[in-house]
Image 1 (cartoon, rainbow, N blue to C red):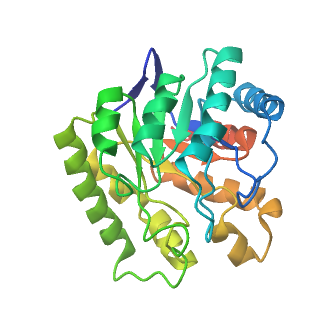
Image 2 (cartoon, helix red, strand yellow):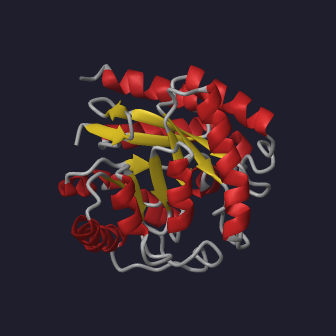
Image 3 (tube, rainbow, N blue to C red):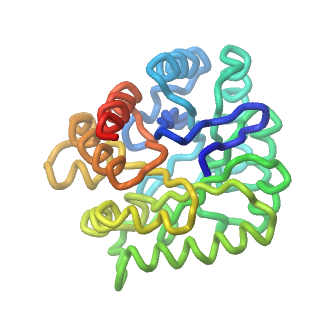
Length: 274
């Protein structure tokens, strides 16, 4: 799959692209609370687009470890005005809605979103695959062990790569049966994985390409950077860039990041290798 069709727009994946993270929450692990009003959201969207982001991923529910639940009504209240404002000011932009609720996904696309990013990979609530199929937008299918509230409480695998691959096989089959035609796989770095699990997934990332679907990697400022280096997320840009570079060399198609400029530069430099 070399192109993604996001409504009337398309993304060319013949070269990797960047998805910029824009959290609309007060409590996300790195930038929570920075983008709670429309003006700040628009400024950040403009910055990420000017730095080369192909997609802006809007999240209205924090999914950091131990994050509290957010109601559907609150998620909609945060998400829909942001989508509408960004699409009004930047009509050429492709917005991804980071949601696991089918009704929110439908409303987001109706307000202008062109992609759905689901951390539960269709497991949260019945109907997500049918909804995405009817919306005819790309769908990011992520692996997570457990739920955000308890996913980091001693996650265990016999073979993390094999188990994530099995999950993808099962969910992809359901997607195809329900009519979802554009699926992107996200191994879910940091979602129910130890640092060692995360590095095993990164080391064998190319094994997920056998499904014939694009791969999204979301490593930005997470624990697999911070813990080995004993640094806070605020100091993790360099380490993030190192691991994003490795991900690109192992076949990543989309880098989901807080820092767009550095990820775009990594793509350009790795691309020089041919």
